[in-house]
Image 1: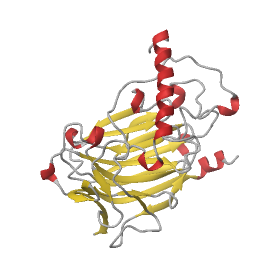
Image 2 (image 1 turned 180 degrees about the horizontal axis):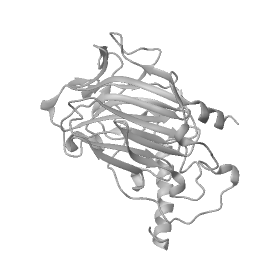
Image 3 (image 1 turned 120 degrees about the horizontal axis):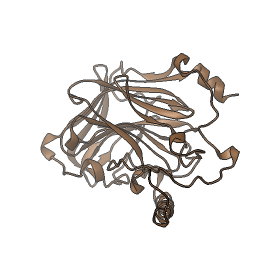
Length: 317
């Protein structure tokens, strides 16, 4: 707990200004995956008065232990060729993606389905002015959800410079550009820290550039040798992240602020899924890139999305 002082008030003001600058300068396609993970928290800030209609993630009553879930969207990758275009779009380009990443994302050569798996492959090759290629699949417009369980069974790439991610972004950006509309990182991994998995959320109040993002890590042996299940349970008042069905991260905004607003909880709007391997970048390339390891693959066995009848009924009341 950090007591409020003139210095900390100035820090909070500076953070808001920084957020405004990021929102003004970034294009939608440049929103980041993540960067250096901090354990800093925004705790003990002055609790400003909030209009009742602006309060988020409060007032929900449900029996958590008796929620039921039904499968509503999935890709089992039981076909061959390019990813199913009724379920997946692509982000394409080599802009650095807000993180000084080194790859060019393609839509026709770095993602394929074979032997029951989706394969995303990062390669060392010159293409469109970049030195690496990879793919970033997105479900936007074809798979957009509000609350539920998202499960991805995946085997990760390894080696210096790899930065795979399974994550979510806002579909309609109703609260503004990144980070105001939120980001959920179901799984991030950087090759220089093998077998350490990160789960994080980012919002206007809690994000990496001001050192306040909420995050957790878990060491799992063999993430590049075996498939592991990376998942979240996203409820109207909390987000929980799991590896192989073991809970290791919970974000509950009322633990940090008595009356959260969209600045702490933008997660009451539809979001979509992203799957990608970045090369290098501010975090992935923090200790360099080993060109000798490429190509590298993230292999995905399935993606499954479930929703709860009880939660759907609750939010429709």
